[in-house]
Length: 516
Length: 67
Image 1 (cartoon, rainbow over the protein chains, first blue to last red):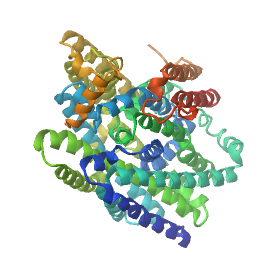
Image 2 (image 1 turned 30 degrees about the horizontal axis):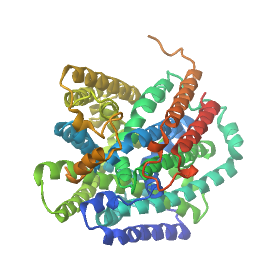
Image 3 (image 1 turned 60 degrees about the horizontal axis):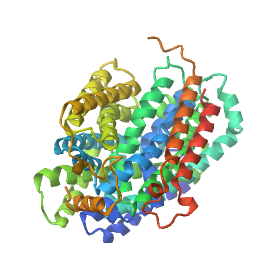
Image 4 (image 1 turned 90 degrees about the horizontal axis):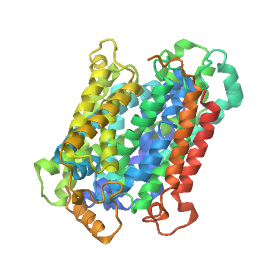
């Protein structure tokens, strides 16, 4: 606790108190389910863009990506560049317009309109389970960070974070989530810039940093690593990350896409993702550089026994009083912005795709609003309970990737064909999805780390690629062997069948108003 | 098939082609699609320009630090 200074604590407490108060301001604007989950479809592009990046930069980035940079160097930045920018452009120009026009609240809801209820339900359950598990990862990361920096008890830290995030997420919905995310991203950027300036001043700038590390770590300043690298083989980065995992994340991830569905126009929806891509280019400065600074400046290797301790080490040892409080507030901002988005999106999935579809089909709007809020509370409690279980994985960031890999490839194959190929039908989607997940599971052997068994599964980047290929082939073959979907059903939902004439817009409007 | 002999610069080449193709594809979209829902057609709202700036920046980054 010797590194806690009065100024730091004051900044941290001020920030922790301000965010929920700021978020609670939006409670009065939430009158319906649409207000709660889509902010009344009134958000401008710059709010959504900031919120997308706030959602994307999470605790796993600060802790895990800095740890990854400590171990592998610049190659970690692939997650922010090749593993994001092309997919964000693709998402903005190809996927988001179709989601937005369909009037859906969730990605599975779009898939229900495009394919069938069965596909929608499977996808909703998969996403629901994945996002709920990710919540556990987020909460666990918060426990590690608060314990590492403030010396607080890990369990107590998790409960404090859970209380703060629940306070404004439950009451203010997506509007509170999105606006607080913008504030949080500003805090993160200021904090990140401070780390960068101080880090470079101690290493003698970029040239000095390279000179310090290059002799002992020759591969730390190249984005691509040789094919025999077990963690970041360049072909795996290009095929698995660039072509599958990244598009799956940016084009199909419910927490990301839901923000764009709250846009006030189609242009705002597209521009929000493009604008977020500009911000994304600077993220390595926040999350990769601290790992390199720690490697260059920490003279006692035992101080960073686990690479995930690289970022806490930088905050404890590099930053002056007051400033480390601000950077730490940036870390908490990253945590909160990812958690609030995940909680809100997961609640939307359950309320729209499971509860409203199968349990209570036609209740007053206020009823679904109440259900959404209750599910939000339930998810927070689940995340707190699940947090310690995520510790069984070898690293926080990897844990998330392991979970993603299982169904991201098959999901992306199904959504890609759904948007781009009118011949893809419900049977192809169903077989492709289930078959792809089976391929994923058998290649990744994801149960091994969960049961404390030695890992024998394939690198997750290759798992993503092969499960995507399997799902794509299965979808195409089965679709061609079975009856096509009627053209009327596909109008406005498939690239090439989009017409901006009044009749199509009327059909889409009716679908949107028809709810589920 | 042994792939370990493929040199690193192939990763850079594939990445540059990837970004260039992406930028080109966005530029081929008609203005009507790009500006749909926008209040006006101001130059700064042209998402094709946004995409080109992103793609070119990334091409430079991967050319410099790729291998």
